[in-house]
Image (tube, rainbow, N blue to C red):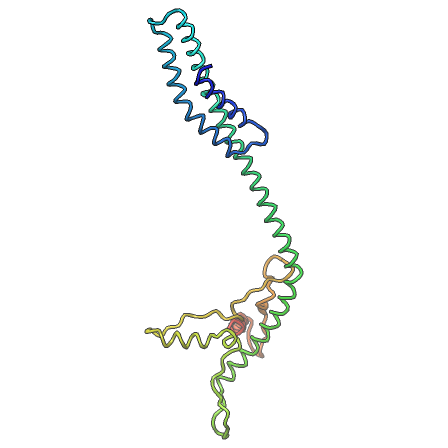
Length: 250
């Protein structure tokens, strides 16, 4: 057996390994790359062996040997030409299977995280909603009182060491909004401060039990039917409702 056949036999074993049950796409990709690289050389070797076998200068013994070499070289080339498409299909199949396996593992991981979060949410959300709703309700009421107080600040008619300055809201103090606005005002050449979201107006908390339509634990649902003052006609009720809801939004 000549050198070409030895090399081909070694590659044949590698190609056969590519079709084993537990082989990976990485191994098959390596075998495919070697097969493709070997094909050009095999084709060149086969053509050289054919040229030599057809040479009129060979003796009868040399012709027999040359014909055997030509057949072996052509067979090695043909096997590679047949193997490469099958290796390509095998590689694609393995990559698809590995991708499917990866997706399934990711699915299982994400589903397990989802289930844990759902259980934690079901256990804790209603408690958080109750606490936040209670806090926001008291904040909203206190902010309404602060607006009224700031409109009618105590004067200096009664001597006192206390200072009755403009009151910031609990939201402002807890989040440092007043300090931020003051610092921004001092640094800005154009004294325009972008609006800062306020908790009472910005937070939305869905109710624990999902439902279609308006289903918020916060903000509270608006009253579409305001009390009718004496002597107010029906067509004026929508205006009263809009004014009442506007006060809630402030």
